[in-house]
Length: 155
Image (tube, rainbow, N blue to C red):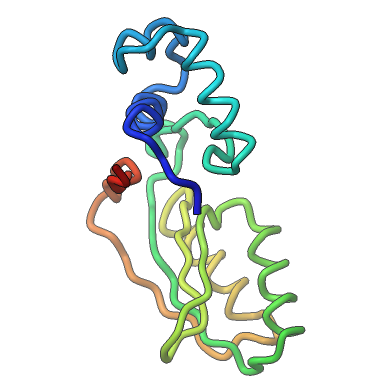
């Protein structure tokens, strides 16, 4: 695990809020000059702490009015079945997040669909995969709220 300094955490928080900020603006926020910010960001990228910078898209304004979570149980719990199922998930653009889990279900995934009918088609596709035993849907009452990644104190 990479030890983050107070300055590193402040830079990361600034980037999480708005990654388009200039190094000068971030530097003014964290009390360092732009060259220090540039070096720290490069070091955080090299260490794998920063894995990319992306644009957040409002799903509703992009035409994705339905967000659901699905729980999937597989028939087979071998490595090959997991790999095949994960390849299917990675090939489905509307599966925006997934994770393997412990317990009754094997996977949880977040689906963003155009509407209820689109969600039903995605559900049917997953249910039709040969390695899938069961699919359960958790319908959300509105869009999920996403917060910034918390950055633990290490100093």
